[in-house]
Length: 603
Image (tube, rainbow, N blue to C red; front, side):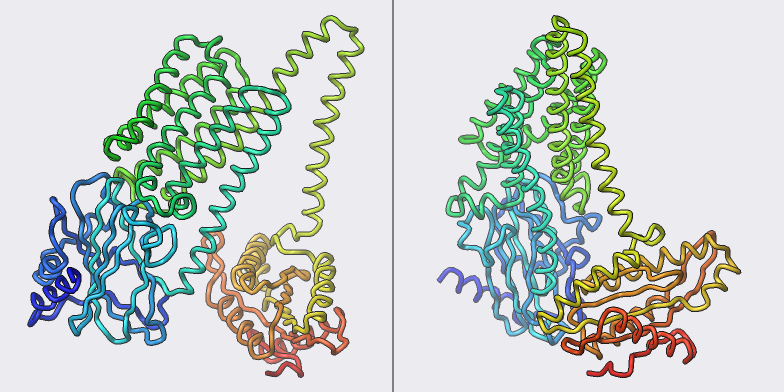
């Protein structure tokens, strides 16, 4: 009943209102629309204003543009209202996703007002159970209906005790699925790295009983829990029915992570023995985070998170100073430790700077902490291995001093041989890879192409699929070499390799440099008309963009021969290439810069 009353009040208050400002337009064919340039915002200091009043304020021009175009406000008080008008000129897409790329918001209320006065209301955020969300996803996203050729007002109310970040955008379902495919892959890769490092060091700790491996596992687990909470995954998978835990888990996991980090530092850098005063300071920092973690269970979220977030910077700098001192004292493992800590500090600084509104939200600021921490974890694992190897070497030296000189010599030579074998294995791996690639373009070479092509033909025959074969030859390439020089010609070939990769890799194409200025592409599951359309797109791109080299804009074009290899025809690799080659020469005879199909490329 209360919601119905609110809707009625909105309709009454806006009756007879004059036309609104020009909306953000979803053009035909548009897949994504970032709303920040079209948003106005208004601060509600006591958080008591309702949607009817804010719609009225928007109608009177009471909303201001986003400061500097940024929707990041840091730690703030009260509620923030955001208003935009959207006009959907895309008749094929009427159901969109309103995406809010930030999971740590307590309350998110969305109001959609249609021209007939109807208002749709949706709510999300960490203050509600996860099951109450419009979409079961770690971000508070919403399905919105935007009828074609219709102006719809979007009003969003956000309040949160965490950093206020409201990066709003509209996505078609397909565009959002493509976006999240890459995001989920990155997140999976990040946690896969952490899980692998945790398990690896668990085995080492069980085998060696070295405390540094135990505290490293604690550090990995603590940091992984922090990121699980910050990504919104903990609320989705661990405690979806507990908003209380969703909010308190963040400061608690931060405290656990920081305790583990400083304790690992104490053990790894051997502070009790090497730097006693610094060890006391480190214990003080650990005590601070233990108290803050306990306080997070009873104290207001912001009163705990802000000092802990601020303390991350001096804490990380303190560890870096300790590491530099250890290096100056001759402690060699600290060198790798310092490098690892530099990556973590940079990533954490980028992420925290967004929380305080110092930097805008972007790829490196949003995922900087994941990238930095992954590199840090990997390097710390190397540092542990180096430290263990160093300790083992020292112990072996003490033992070898009481044994025969021959035994010392054998052990040293064994270590050198092991290193040499590892280097040889790496060199062999690099050699195998280089034998498959063309050195200039990075594409597969002709020999490897034939092997893979034969495998693709067998696979296509088994699954009754066609293969599209394209032979591409740069027109008048000798003229480019004669006019601009062979180095310019090489740059054109490199550019061609990048162009083929950008244009055809998305179709799963097998790409290779066939020789000289000739290239070949095999596109799976491809029929005639589709192949010709794809080849024409490629031809247009090649001739529409000049190659820039040494201040010159070098225009190039290409002739393309196309052939469709259908299953069951008995055509082999050489025959397929020969027919595509015939089509290529027909294209060149026809005046070049064109696509020509083999005689049986139809449908």
